[in-house]
Length: 160
Image (tube, rainbow, N blue to C red):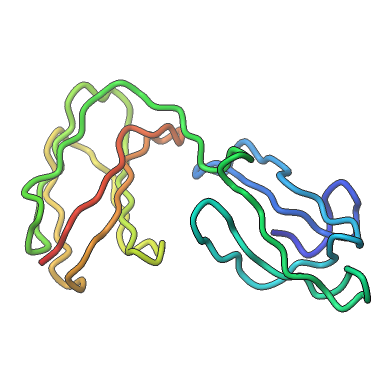
């Protein structure tokens, strides 16, 4: 979100951008009536994000809003050909990433269940060893992306 800017200049907007910083897209514009000056963080629940504005709305005291990010197209990726395997899964924090048929440079991003990135690394070979034994047990999500931001693979891993 931005505090100001967007189509209505001073009211702010919700935007998306690819993981490589390209393809900025204005997703929603505040206009005073539906809110003004969004602030804080967006909270994800299901296919909606929730947030609030500092002002705007009926009494100019701000609003709480929700936004359907699925129908808006946020996080749509272009898939590439290729195969990614992570093994063993579940694991003790040590596992192998195997790439097959992927021609571009790639990186792996690993997130905890709160969506916080806990690991990022370039994958420079067909087989790469990952060490996350210092992370808490639980479910983690991963994405393997090309350097242009195209999705190669995504999935879940379990550390136990």
